[in-house]
Amino acid sequence: MKIYTEKQVITFAIKVLSDYEINGTFYNREKLKETLDVTPIELPSDEEIKKNADKYTIDNNTYYSFINGAKWMKDKILKQNK
Image (cartoon, rainbow, N blue to C red; front, top):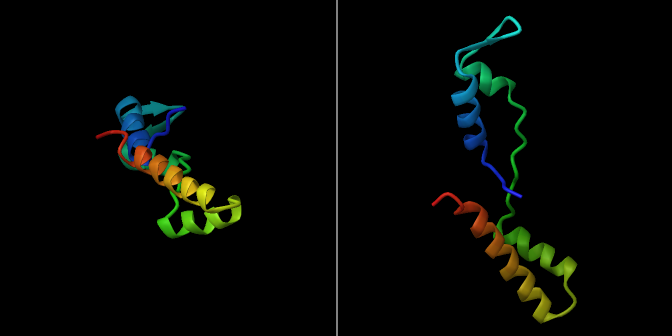
């Protein structure tokens, strides 16, 4: 599954629909931003990752594996376009 940032979705929509009239509505950049229903994915902070590690682990090995795995995934999401 691919995850797109809000900026990527808006940029794509603007390229495709900018300055189009659809059902009597003229869509420009600002109108597109208002009408797009984009729900952003909120990535957890390092503190939130550590709090959840306490809930979902049973010992030190799984605790640190959980933290490292969550940070690895967060890093992959943040750097996917670089």
